[in-house]
Image (cartoon, rainbow, N blue to C red; front, top):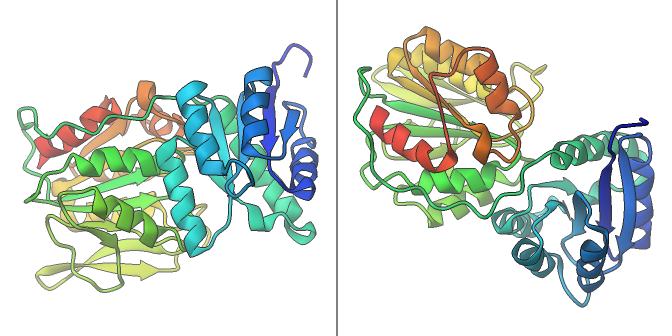
Length: 343
């Protein structure tokens, strides 16, 4: 790795065991270096000023100064890429989503820091630290302005499918809050997130939206003016039953890297709605959504991507743009306006 700059990581956690475990997991690769440790938020803030790390792993629950309070001060005083160490419980989901709203970029399940699950967790931790090491740390995004440009020549879209991964919960808040009451199309969202988080995500978006947002249920009708969040851990697809379009929750394809998969949902929307489907890919790692956008575009529908300057992680939009399946790429604050113009 000579000549290659390492990603410098500060570990902030009140558990000595977790601090040591994170150091060992990140020590398995040559391009990441743990440069310091802190046992609470106050010490973490001081070490962040002193060491200027590229990434901070931050425990949510700590003495003296808790994780969210530490995060809020970090974002105000010295913005840095933060990876939350959380727990996959209902309470943990609420706290984690609040942390993402405050500026954290991603999170890892802290309860997995156990000897039997270290190998799989190490792979996830390394991948996320690498992604965040090259991420842009933005100021908290502004809410989208409601309003639209002149409508394009295509027929008005009836179904909008939005895909997001790392950085997605905050980006979704910007987009969904920009859709007005009486929005004339159905909206479905794939957000890569662990089981148990999608209901909390839907509730938080619903509280900030002019249109209802809820977790999708198997067999329910897809309606205009409603945002449905694909449940974590299972695929969501659309099917036409008589005059109605309904949600189908399905385990197949089991080999997909993500469940739910944006590719699966978008492909089904393309089949059901044809040129009346609209696909959108926002910030995130990987390439989920590229083939889905291809399906929509081939059926005559419009495809959009978040442009590089506002992405936390440019992976998913970049993959789709480089594959030639995106009609337009726009900054996050313009996505809602583009959607409105299309419907």
